[in-house]
Image (cartoon, rainbow, N blue to C red):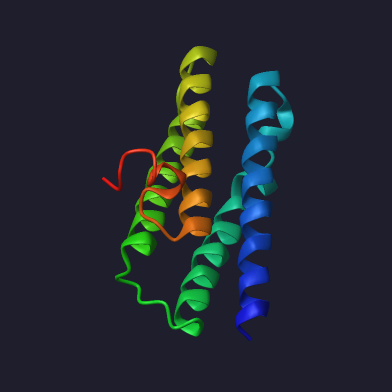
Length: 130
């Protein structure tokens, strides 16, 4: 059951991230696709399922939700969501690019935390464990 939940979670992460990228490229291109209801609504249930599957993986894998790396992932996710919202709410391509770039860096951070199980992710060893 754990592996099935983990694969589901990873698949939902990939779908969510691909939708974010596609929507951003449409934003930069001024595409009318971005205004379609499907692409305004679809990310929300996918993201909800992604979050719920993450909790299911943690619970099924006996990972305490109070683990520092889980808290770091959740904090990173909140920051990623906020940056994503700012990417699509801001006007001006330079601001949108800034928030998009920050969201990408946050996504990389979340992934490295998930892989290393360290709150600092891949940066944990770079700063002496701070």
